[in-house]
Image 1 (tube, one colour):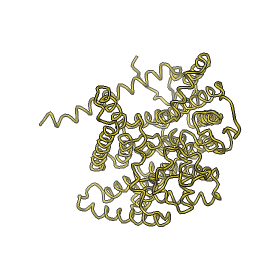
Image 2 (cartoon, rainbow, N blue to C red):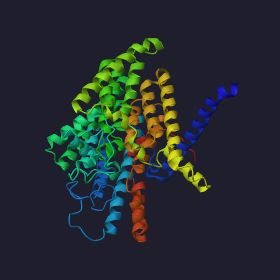
Image 3 (tube, helix red, strand yellow):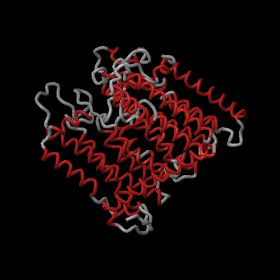
Length: 536
């Protein structure tokens, strides 16, 4: 029994040792093999340097915009009439240029590498030197966002599905029953990914109401609807920035650091603005709701969290945490039942009103796992299922289908995620409940059937204002790997590189290597403490 009780402590100790070693190794390599090693960390000289990361971030985003503007760029949809520029003409013929293909790759990957470097160093400056002027950080956010506001929808085609569902809603066709292909020969249908052509929508009624309203306001013009959805997500990201500053102040944290970690997070800019995903609206409403809860305004908190749930269902975790912590840590389980009932009442009323506004009832609930048709190695539960299924076939057990094994591993993943979420909720007030909610949302994504980089924003934005200890490292790690996991067209990209001129590939690698090690300015020295000992 003693050994069983000691097991969690051993696991924790092993995790801390491995994570600490990995983090230290990364820091040593970064300091030794990047321009950071040229600087001797000195006294902090104030915030006048912020114009440098502002321009570097703008340059990085502009490179991504440029790379996504080529007619054969693998990072966006190349179809006639889907954006204002960078799309093939209706009578385009011939083989796409190999050189342009490689230039697009170099520009996008170069921009991503530069953006990650600038953001990481700025994050570390904020962590070590609190008290940054948030008014200047808003200027940085605007500058970094501008290229993504202009860019065609990148890294995902989901916004075209949203537009088609909005058109369906405006004509009283239920997206909870039918897929976008129901629109027939409408211009809204052509850009929709065939994978989702006949798939009903899993989104809440508030999003469908907003989606349908944008389709009506656009005059049922497909491209104008897509632009309207992009504008909606830009507003949502601005609300994320506002909510994070509210939440950080309520928690006694530095609002500048939370703002850079969350609102200026590359995942947020690239996928929530660039990809125009509705996760931006859900995250914005959720973080504002949690900020109201920390400020002891629970009714407003429940209203905003309920509205977030009416966009996407995972925000319901926020409702659970607000209700559970309403009365404080001294409350008994029996006493917590009343706040839970209040939360259920507010949620039911909000979902009822928004369902009436959208006009399609609660059919979205049964569609929540519709994205399970996607099989991605980025999701551990799905990767394990596919690996086991293929291994069974390799040893001759053909009777067991990969689909069956996959269903089992995904179910186990959801059960484990649910168990962790319940444990974190139970321990939330001793751990810090906002932080526990953020970790719960990240685990629900990582152990779910599909991991999309924009899903990670749900929890990472909350952790930006509430992280402790090692969570800071994992927040950074998920942020800098997420966009690369989510890049589309992997097979097309690989095939293009295999058949490309080796000299062009060597030149591309050399350019990207230069971006990775090029000095960014003296301001980066303040991203390290003045006295820092690194292992040789």
